[in-house]
Length: 205
Image (tube, rainbow, N blue to C red):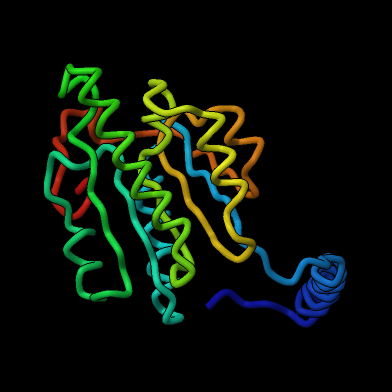
């Protein structure tokens, strides 16, 4: 263990006391007790969906119900779907996509799949028993104009006051970012895919 003399300890205590006073004042200044948040996870880095499912797990830990609509990831099996199935009716899960647009190569089919997924999303947004809705890869559908951006943003803004919604996917539209309460852009610093490592069970799916 690194040795710390009395002077260092006193200095540290005084510094942390000042830090605590600043933090306490900042917390005391927050006047909104609770509200449903619109959260957007975007950017080129890995982990957008993973972070959303972390929030879902946290909600489930408090006994709340969660709804999930996957707009793209329908063409392959994922471990998260199996894991959340263990929570029974606490999780309402709809995998609606048919894969990325470069895989389907059929714009009419892609639009139809996106519209069907959005219809399911609207059902979950209207369900008063659900506390969190994850709209996985909705940003992809919006990026390719498969859905009407204004209509989507209007519906998300009109959600009930206590409902949390997480939207994931690269290239979030400016209007969605503007409407959101919390936006996280995940950067790509380094990725194993660039070194030739294939997608792996438990990491990518």
